Image 1 (tube, chains in turn purple, orange):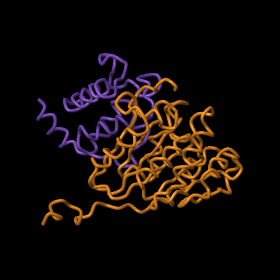
Image 2 (tube, rainbow over the protein chains, first blue to last red):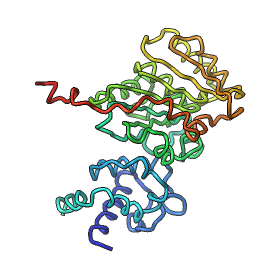
Image 3 (cartoon, helix red, strand yellow):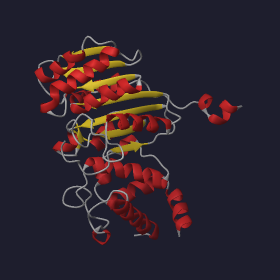
Image 4 (tube, each protein chain N blue to C red):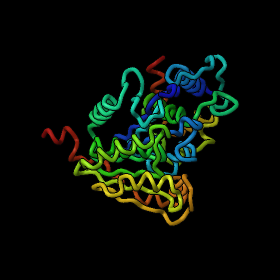
Amino acid sequence: MTARRDWLIEQMRQLLVEKLEVRVPVTEIHARTPLFQGGLGLNSFAVVDLISQLEQRFQFQFREADFREEHFRDLQSLADLLESYHPAGLMALKEATA
Amino acid sequence: MRERVAGPPFVHLSRPQSSQLFLVYSGMDAYYSGQQICSMGLLKFLQVSGLGSRNLTWIRDPFFNNYAGGFGPDVPDLASLENWHRQHLASLPHVREIYTIGYSSGAYGALLFGHLLGANKVWAFSPRTADWETDAEAKAALRARFQQGNGVTRYDVWHAHRNRLDRQFADTIRDCAGVTVHSHPKYGATHFLLDRMILSGEFQSLLPGESPVTAALSPSLAGG
């Protein structure tokens, strides 16, 4: 796993706890923790909230075709999707917040 | 009043390139599962409805009382929720067209706020109220507002042709200005008309074409 990937997943873990008020300790949220049932138990309203938060945080817009459950299975799959958008922008943000 | 449902009362997806805002009222969905609008998940809805590329605000009815309880302490009643809507619109200066959509008791919100805000158009699918105890009172209050008219908004109310309760709600405002009631000939008595119409592509065909923010609306150009 790359440093960028680690950083991205960490950003999303913090976002889940701070913005979405997920009632799971951040230390128990891992890259493969399911976002839905059997994991964080997000309902789909919370997932749309997550989409909104991600778009604001990383300054991009999801394509409609990417609103698929397989992309939102866990933080690993979400990171795969986010990196397909503009990894250069993510790196710039990482450097700015380092 | 029921106990407030947990979670944010609204979610907004910003699309600065679009001049259209769709206010979607989720009504009782959160009460039943929090998973869906109509019977499909919100992700699926975003993927296939044609709304994922436009400004979109999902608005819950956290107390399940036809939005009369607002969002909570900061927005405690209908008047303050109407004011919240106006502030929300003011925060989106690129928006030129406002549409409201609701399913089931969310249809009540779509009709009510579409009327109050003077929306371009309202789509209300399988309309119901959120609470049987106040059902008649809530319908009468909506009808009273609609009889005054706002002179602007067109309301399309849809129900499956054999769904008696949805039709009864539609009949409440059928004769009011701007209201067109559509009795859908397919799908029997279903209450899930919206997802049937989304999956068949009928819903998407109702939507106006996408309307991008034009250069003419750019503040820098307008100022020159």
